[in-house]
Amino acid sequence: MMKLQSLAVAALIATMPFGAPGVTAGAPQAQESARYEDRLGLRAGEIDTLVARTMEAFKVPGMAVGIIQDGKVVHAKGYGVREVGKKGKVDDETLFSIASTGKSFTAAALSLLVDEGHLRWDDKVIDYIPEFQMHDPWVTREFTIKDLLIHNSGLGLGAGDLMWWPTSGFSRDEIIRNMRHLKPVSSFRTEYAYDNLLYIVAGEVIAAVSGQSYEAFVDSRILKPLGMKHCAADRRRLKGHKNIAEPHVLVDGTLETTFRLEEVYEPSITAAAGGIQCSIKSILKWHALHLSGGKLPDGSVFLSEAEQARIMTPQTITPVSKSRQDWFGTSFSAYGLGWFLEDLYGMKVARHSGGLQGMTSLNMLVPELDLGIVVYTNQQAGYDRQAILYSILEAYLTDNRTDWVSKLLTLQETRLKEAAEAEPDLEAAPYTPSGDLGRYAGTFRDPWFGEVVIEQAADGLRFTARRSARLKGRMVPYKDDLFIVRWEDRALKADAYVNFSKGFDGTLSGFTMKAVSPLTDFSFDFHDLDFKRTKNAGGHS
Image (cartoon, rainbow, N blue to C red; front, side, top):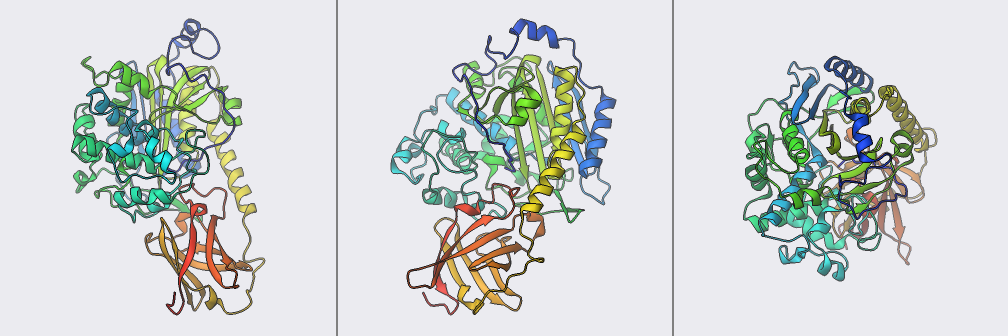
């Protein structure tokens, strides 16, 4: 869920399963294995130094880093504190919000049900969730279980995420019901666009088939058999638990704690898309399962060979950014089932990142090296987790020693500067609209997001979303019929344009929105909203 993706054109031979013999980029597989067999990665002390430097550079209060190779945990350590200004230390059992990296659990849960014969990947979603409806009736009829997981539905990037972000103001049933109002931006199964809502639907399919809630299924059928004691899908089990990292953000250069979508011990509306809490000690067991081909430590089969291969098989081609081509020689990129798949330094990897307000996560598997790496942080700093991951990965796969901390910090600072320069300076060029501001006041409704109230106050117009408690703020005039709403919670970093439209009679009939900064997280999908006036300031329709 904070999912900055670079977009470019990718080429991929998608007919071979991920990790299949004979498809390694570059030299033949036997030669590649010989190149890497003697590499030991970074020593523990080197990792400690790397993490300390990264945390200082990116202002991260707490972090956890884990590495597993050949079935053995070679590094699992916490750094810093769970909450700034307090003494509680991060360790390998500290729980973090793992966000979208938890999508792999949803994929595996469905795989278990497929293995048991309870469903098939090409079953239609409406056979299990009759109320499921996309904007196009044909797409609704054809939508399969597999389509829920592979980000090629035709919806735009993060479409509908405002129903749960930055406040989870809708139930799962309401989210499913409202999906019919989300208009596609491409044809079904033709383009990649990262999606969260369809994973929520997938979680409800699991509940419908198993007779258990998504959370109960994951806890009982995955976490318990794997011995993942410091991990919870049903977060009600965490009430009273103390070893939990708190989320942080930088606001005007000051590090402070920030909000959660729900209290950490409350059920998460987005559990199947990214609501699981976990520690690196437990998640390394998850890595071990996938690196062993779906087998438990005692050799028994947890996922069949066929289903494990399917999870790691490319399903949807994804773009390859120029930076990944230049840095890692990446030639293909795809999405499997709950994992991104690509090649780095000539080795195939599976990876997934995740982010929620104030927390980030990053998982990577390198099957040919039987290697897994995990990085969790409690600050949405940006490139901090990548600096750790790339440094560790590079030590295993190359003779290079790139200063990833400096490289990525410079890149982040450049992007932030460019974004700041692109934003309008409201103080340097204030705009005073003509006429009475009261003409903009009223109640406006979007078909899936619900009502917004715009009121005239002493300091001007104010914007309040009735279904998203944190989306409220002052509207600053920018141009004729165009305002910028500045959210009261500055940690959101998501100010938005509000552009009013007029009907044929000249009256203001509604408005559309768009994020101001190009760095605004894509889950603030303001551009998908289309508000129409339902009542004017006096309460008349």
